[in-house]
Length: 167
Image 1 (cartoon, rainbow, N blue to C red):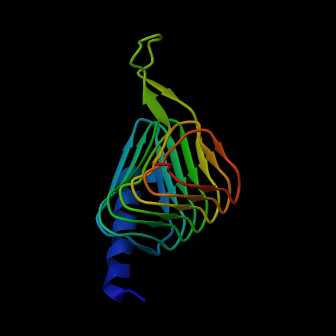
Image 2: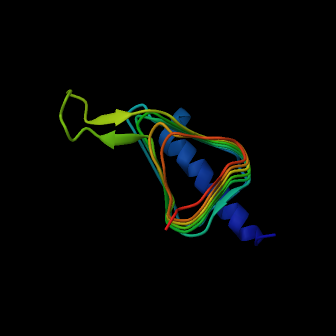
């Protein structure tokens, strides 16, 4: 169990975020975050379940999108989740160092007036994602999947799949 002061500090952090962002931010009161960074722009929303934790800098950016993280998830140092549409993460997920989850790409071809091209990201329950993994827009990872370190993931990953980077 962590020090009681950590729980109190995080409860205050949750209350302050609820005051700052109003209904666009919701979280269970029991979190053990270390250096979380939350940014919500436009109509963006962030929902956090209970008992989530991280180790060092976690970036959650809802730039008009919706981020929903279930219960008992762990993010290691330097992870980030950025949404302009939707990122949904299930319960009991574990993320290694420097994991990046994005639901959009920049529209570098300029084929339309939109700055970003986006599609939903869904990560099922009990998923383990190793260090330095990038999860791209339009990805759906099934429950109990394991993604090895250094992978770039796009598309559908079946439940209980084991994905490793080939060398």
